[in-house]
Image (cartoon, rainbow over all chains, first blue to last red):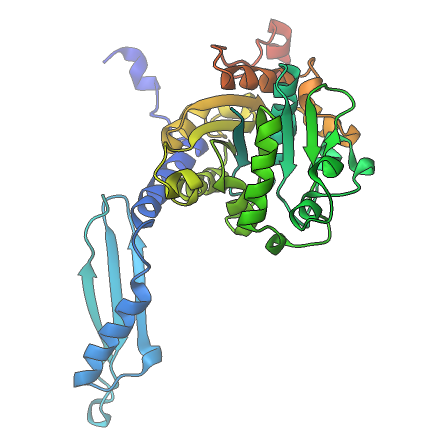
Length: 104
Length: 271
């Protein structure tokens, strides 16, 4: 390490570098999704059908969220279960979390 | 053998029509008999860029519907030998384009021309699909900007899946990247994607880099393809791109900022 290095701050990434990184992440996902059908609506329906076998849930109380990061995708399914009158105070949310296969 | 070149981008406003006019005119200047077809049904603009808007009588759709003969609809350019324009309809919509009708006209044009340029509309709907279906070459026009690069990637996927060559399992459409509105000053400042970044992401061969230039607006204002303005950087860059398309080895120009004198630099620093 030379003396000069002390005065050199590591530069923050340029705006262009941020643009490039965002593009690379989004395109990696879009390319891998290109040939696979959009399965989220069907997944939501089927999950709901399974849950309904055991508890009665409101169709509007199901939220499916997909979070994309560079390494993997996070699929989050939130199902709000109705609170029984006896335990009205109890938190009525159950979260089911799962990971989809990491995008190649 | 006639070649069909589709000028496409996915995103609108990136310079497809400007590039169709410039590349088509450039090919005609090289002695190739060239026809440029406007596929943007309902939003006709190639005629304005080429400066032949007052000579349009019949159009592409008239010919498809058998209301006019091909020779009646083709407009011969008054400046450049071997150059023809096939304008589109301003009143119909994209549904007027039928695969059979378009195919028949392209087959007819192929007998007479060396190059047929299909100026695609924006989007990935019917008009764009019709423009890319018969392509032998696709020139993807991209601005160094996130939405344009993303849409270019998308349209490349469409070309690889839905073109005639893909459907029939023939040799794939040859893809070429044309980066337009490149601003070297902003690239130097780290504000704009470098051409290398765009190339790394899209991973197709680079045909040319057209610098941001006031000559492009000037040329469209007067209805002249910018390649005819051989004093302008954009015009020269298009001429180079045409040379590269024809297989010539031409180095890329206008990708480094002009060297500033000492005085300029001093003034800049204090400004």
